[in-house]
Amino acid sequence: MPNVACIIPVVGNTEGLETTLVSVLERRSEFCEVIVVLNVPYSDPYHLQGEIQIIQAAPGARLVSCINRGISASRAPIVHLLATGCEVDEHWTEQALKHFKDPRVAVVTPVIFDRTNHQRLLAAGVQCGLGGKRIIHRTTPSASGSPETLLGPLLQAAFYRKVALEALGGGLSTDVGDDLADVDLASFLRQAGWRMVLEIQCRIFADSIAEIAPGGFFAGLWAERFYLRHFSEAGGFKGLLAHPRIALQDLLQSRPWWKAPAFAAGRLTALCQLGHYPAYRRLQETAAASASAAQNQWQTNRIKNQAQMASSDRRNRADVAHESLPPHNPRREHSAPRRLRNR
Image (cartoon, rainbow, N blue to C red):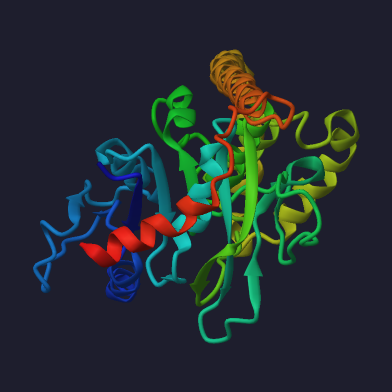
């Protein structure tokens, strides 16, 4: 039974797929299943079907839909997302999986380095900033600090506990598009009470990190939906003051410029969809109940381990009476060697 499923979504073209597969297949453990989900035709020139699982998604399926298809097909309790073109370091899954021994941890964030310069850090996680802005962190916390962090992983490289995704129907939400799905999920799980960990020894190598280019109706719709879903995460009423400025900046950065009116219309449309948010809150309550169950499990295991350690300590205490030893007999010290020589 695999303990982790490496899901590689392929959207638009298969460029970089072989590079990623070679890296993963060379370095994966025997308990790692590999699932490739494509929305384009693939002839499997290296006859890998059987060694890995190749799933054909609907033509034109978006990134999140392909990821969710891979998650539903996986058998492992932990799912690992990896973008095409990425390469992995030795023992990269083991470095992440050690944190999932804690049932309270739902997310492990790897660090992403430049594929041509392994010392250049590209990303150490993503976070919801003030006013609902998606922020990519390009520095890692101090090694002496706590491993727990507010940072979630980018979809380019991420580890999730599968049971934590069940409140979302078993996968990522499609309500905020592909660009915001990673920070949306991280914010959702953190607010629900799940823990996230940044693992700096889990290293992924990529050519670049794609930035969001605002523009078009759906970009505006998804951006405003994300902000409304995570109002408290985006700073609450303090973020409310910053949000118009951030929305205006995105509007002015729309590319091409003639998509700016559609972008603004998308944000206004999201404001008219406030009736959808009570259902989202109920979804969050379900996720919070799952996180609470994980917390209770951790607490139960902790009490059990403490009881076992106390019992073991009592058995090994120095003041426990020792069994009486026979009187010292110097003649017996040499009897055993003589018996061995006479055999």
